[in-house]
Amino acid sequence: MLRRTAALLDAALAGRRLVRAELRWPTMPTADLTGCTVLHTRPYGKHLLTRFDDGRTLHSHLRMDGVWRVVPTGSPRAAARSPRVRALLADEHSTALGIQLGMLDLVLTRQEHRLVAHLGPDILDDSFETGGLAEAQERWRARRRAPVCDVLLDQRVVAGIGTIYLAESLFAERVHPWTPADEVDAARVLRTARTLMQRSVLRGPGPSKAHGREGLPCPRCGATIQRGTARRPPEERPVFWCPVCQAPGGPSDREGRFSRPV
Image 1 (tube, helix red, strand yellow):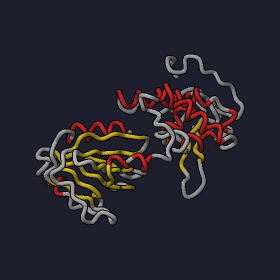
Image 2 (cartoon, rainbow, N blue to C red):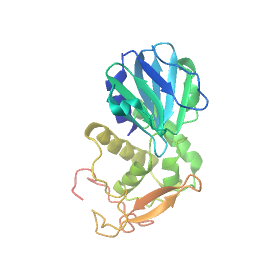
Image 3 (cartoon, one colour):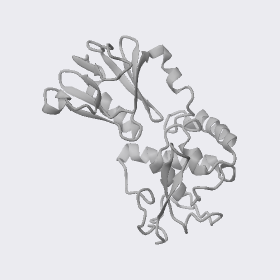
């Protein structure tokens, strides 16, 4: 969850001056952030924007395998000898390691909007209910007959939903993943995804109802959870669903879906 990663980086580095900074990226062989003070890290969808007091922003994207880890400065891991480390930001106490990052850019903060301008509204942003949801619905309508699983993963429609909350939100709403998008209540599904993701930010990830449970019994009806594929190569992603609770054109018993044991 990107917001938890942003909070981790803020807790370690926000307001502190960097004593060591390395960007091990082919397009930035001479970039240096040593001596800069970290202002904060802002998440946007699946992107992280770490801002500095000199007017620059470090943009990182984890993709499938990336992660930021924080270790004590001076510890063996802080030496960062592994070739998997793509970025290192350290103050006197904490060292943040960007491991297997999928994307890294250093831009002027006033130009950072160009990096996320193509994205839909951030589903976890405070403004989502007051403006982002309407924009996301408009973008959703443009996808019309595309499968709802593909639309939920399309960051140009709404930013932030990945394979976990694709599966979990459709399971909660009893929606077949390959239902055409224009046959699905977009606002309802997006609000469900937002609620589940907010809970994860506050409490940490809970047990999955569908995601990753291929071959296991559905916690609601006992049928065997199946696995399929969303999107086309090379961007395909796994989708987990219940063939009974989420049968095509099946019932949509949504009342009490978050309060009733399943």
